[in-house]
Amino acid sequence: MKSVAALSLYFLACTARALDTDDLLDRVDTALSVAAFQDEVRLRLSGTIDLEGYHFQQPAPGLIDSNIDNLFNPRLTLFLDAQIGPKVYAFVQSRLDRGFDPSDHGAKVRLDEYALRFTPWKDGRFTLQVGKFATVVGNWVPRHLPWENPFINAPLVYENVTAVSDKVAPRSAGYFVYRFQGEKYEFNPVIWGPSYASGVSVSGRLGMFDYAGEMKNASLSSRPESWSVTAIGFEHPCFAARLGFRPNQAWNFGVSMADGVYLRPEAEPTLPPGRDIGDYRELVLGQDASFAWHHLQLWAEVYEARFEIPRVGDADTLAYYFEAKYKFTPQLFGAVRWNQQIFGSVDDGRKGSLRWGQDLGRIDAAIGYRFTSHTQLKLQYSFQHETTGPRDDNHLLAVQFTVRF
Image (cartoon, rainbow, N blue to C red; front, side, top):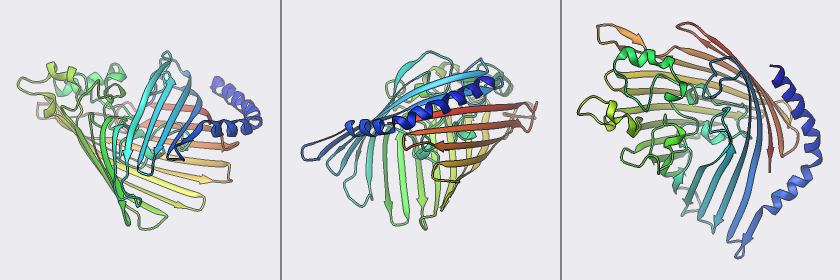
């Protein structure tokens, strides 16, 4: 906790320097934009520098991969946007960090997103996109990057690791439930963050309705190592879609669906005889809503998910969150989020049943301040409580300082 407090003071000291360099960052922003061929081709390089500090109890919550209680997690993210005429757009996102999720590993460079987008009509009724990009499901993904997300972490459904493994099939229902005590990163959440899997999507808006559909190479629960088409091909594609309804400027409602194979190829030898990974799927149904009025913004998502588990059967879970953000001033905002995930039971093969996960509740509270149009500081506290089982608690303190250029 002391290290997080010290890190917060360090970030505050840095903001004084950030105020002095705000004009410099404006000039850098202009210098990183290029136009050619009478503005028919426009390129823009931008990015963020994120300095994050975490203090938590072991085992580390969510997708944090660390055996130490205090974690410093820096990250450099670069974005390249290219507009070619009025109809073609391309983008690339790359990162230098310690891993897709916060960890104590060494630094490495990674290409997270790249896509080509074609929009033949000006009214946006249809867009075709090909590449590696975030899922169309839900309403959190469009605001998951640090500058738009009022919190430092993701909602529970996007980061709570379950007993489902995409690498090894369980030997029995008991093994499925109790082996979860092992290495956390052998297992998967319902949705792994923004799910940057590879594939193709179509989207558009027709009056008060908007739609999006995608075919990807990996399911929503798939780990980042599966998202590249060179790692997992299209032998078992995942399909997902969202239908949205905007009755006015304040409200936005949506329904999402996804169906895909969640097991990786290395799980094939562990399956029952005569079965392959295509026989076991992840099915997701989601509902989302958002509301904006003056300084207040509200979001909510509910997901019902089913994993078809070898030798076990259907494993069902329900997860949801409610989130509110309020702007006290043009620079100061606060946010609160309530998350919960509930697990069903599976047949143990002896006329009994086993709960395949411990129900969880988590409250997240954050406050943020934008010193300039290029610098932002966020502080967050989270309390997670198991409502069944051993009822283990976990407290998390986090701080994030972002420089945008």
